[in-house]
Length: 455
Image (cartoon, rainbow, N blue to C red; front, side):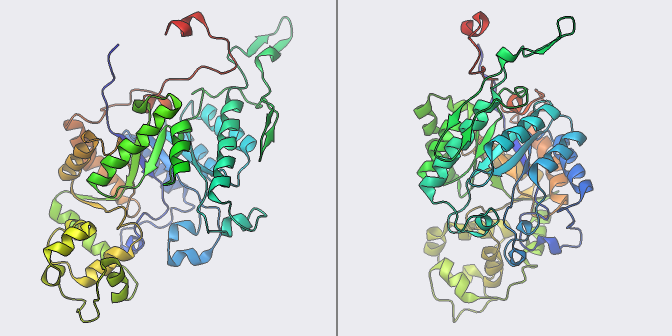
């Protein structure tokens, strides 16, 4: 049996106003994506035109208007299953990944929702399971709790949560539907199974009141930086959503998280590491860098040298904001602080001032997830090189604003990835598991068939 050719996996993150904290101020930016069905239709179809593997819907269960001062995407957020059902109706092939928080959601209700979505989309549903950030208690207070769960406790709950969903997904065997009109038998009740789950946090009898999903088991996405998260992902996840910090860091990270698969007897080639990355793409490198600078100049915060000094690790009280980095900092400082080089790369030249650097570090994510800026050819080569070096298996596109950057990526980067031979030229499957190259698992309640035993 030949090994399938490894190809780049692509996802699109459907943020209402994009990744950058100030890019929404651009004249061409569309900022009604929070509740606009046309935005959902346009972006989902554009991603499908680019043969993306899945359309990703994040989640926000806190409700703090003040968030607009820090992260405006979390002020309003449509409920994920509702969005996914809508997107399923206006697309044909692209996967649909919904985010749920296992610290607050009910596993039976979640199983019903995700299995329903899988049936209505004909096998395109995926589930991103998050556990919430420790120390942030506002979401808990929307669910009748005072504080968010601590690390060990929230992962014990997350283990029960996914175990119940997986068992409920299998609770009806294939062949359940008899439709025997002569005898009056509609379904074969012997094909239904209770799961009788009793744990520390949940008690669920089952079965699910839905047939098994078309994919058998729903593909799972997970993220996190703790040992508990790595083990959880190694046991249950099919995709690890990760940051992109640097080439070296991500190559080490890739090998580390894949090593956890062996603990659970799983194939690391059926587990995909997909970081979220912001791209500024244009017809030429110069155009892309001009757009990046235009966006950076929209940062609204007043210049705070202390903020830059903290990140840089040196006193800047005597440095003018208009001075260039290369005229003040020596080579050793650039070597020590590698993100300084990412700033120069993003701006595209050495005319980067301390004010520019302030704008750069003020945007959430630039230090841990530096943007990639350039022409379609340059960006495609960057993706291909990191893919082939096994720094990742693909990327989740974080558009800096809505919705031009998605179209630019589809029109300028996708053809170059195809030319490089690392990206598909057509969908090869109809389901999300198929897009990810994952086999359909056997039902845990079914006796092995002779055909399955021979495989």
